[in-house]
Image 1: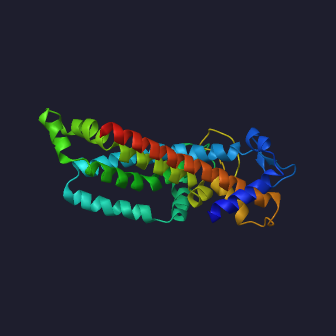
Image 2: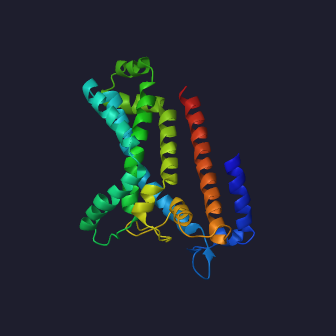
Image 3: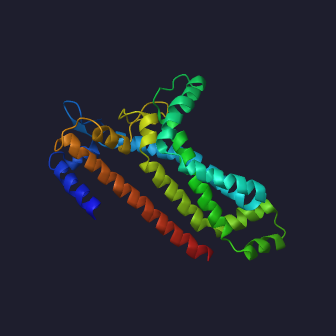
Length: 268
């Protein structure tokens, strides 16, 4: 309640100076330069660009690892991979950011020479690697919760192991799988340090992942750690951005809840 109260009060103060029409109706974000412009869409576009790229890596990869661990992996292999996933999930995000700068970006530049030093692609890759262990672990738990009798019914009908996994086990565990997907997207949407280090701080509305962009969270970091005077319009803008981030994350969680409830009622 305290966090929401502070965000709301500072956001109201911000919109007393900047109109909501300018905030959502402009495509230029330049709060530090004259004339100041507060069009939020470059930050929103950069955030969704990295979230989509991370989802393309983390969601299929996590589901595949979860299926492998639950259905195909030998006990020794599972005992090795499961702790490894926990280690990956525990690595600080700033390490992922430096990994993107020193390994991922140079690799991309060798393959695609147009890649900028700071770019959305490398940020999306490392964020996808970050969310993959969470998706894999949650999917594995959801798949293991499917009753054995449900799988045996599939085998009794002559289905192969792969068919039982994809056509019986996955649909039966779909509520937990969907929840893991939405949680991964929420995590990617709110990621800060890895994105700040890898993607840069250029508020640009683009679909080109090889260019430098700026996200909602990285803008908050840029202003919070700089010399912006407290009470200025630039300072108040981080609360408006934070409120937007809070609202979108809340919508993601509400969507996850509704999808879980829907699929659980269907398959039960």
